[in-house]
Image 1: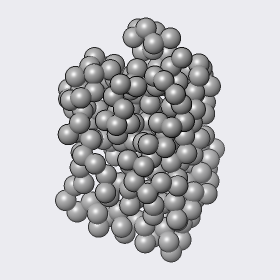
Image 2: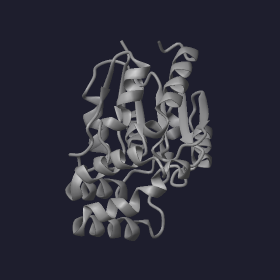
Image 3: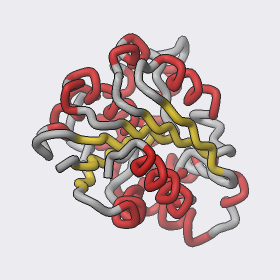
Image 4: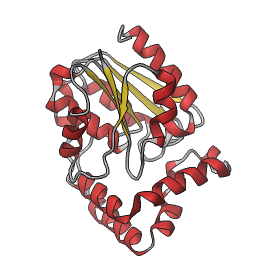
Length: 232
């Protein structure tokens, strides 16, 4: 049996993927990537959650973890789903910006999240008090230690683009049309770099937290793709 391995992103827990995972159904596990110090360690821990063929389903940082899983165990990949993510190595000036966020979180996690979160959500959803409140609570609850550990992993991340050519399984890329952090062109770049068949689905009215903002659209896209690729 093929297992769907859902991987949350930065300052996220299982709730980011819960509605999607339950809606898509089948055998699945939602991973915890809050305790590991590197993208590779995260990938190894997620791979250990199931035996046999898997389909990593990663959001944001979780997408990078999923691509690393494909590099580490290509023979186990039945498919790959990447949502609102990127493939590039550390950019010039990125380290300083990320370290500044860590310092802000160490000083006042609530204030840091209040400033960080809105650009991560589609502008059309900023007035949704329930959604913004839930995401704020989740991110603050992760705490400054998890934040610092995950930022360290991202700063020292592998260049996923260097290994994408070795991805021969089917790949589904999902992105919100209002995602300003990991915009659509990044996903089309990944689609062009993998060796297997790839599909890009752009969801209207969603930002970087697409799986939480528009779970119904993600469920539909994944269900259709799994059927089309004969993975169900």
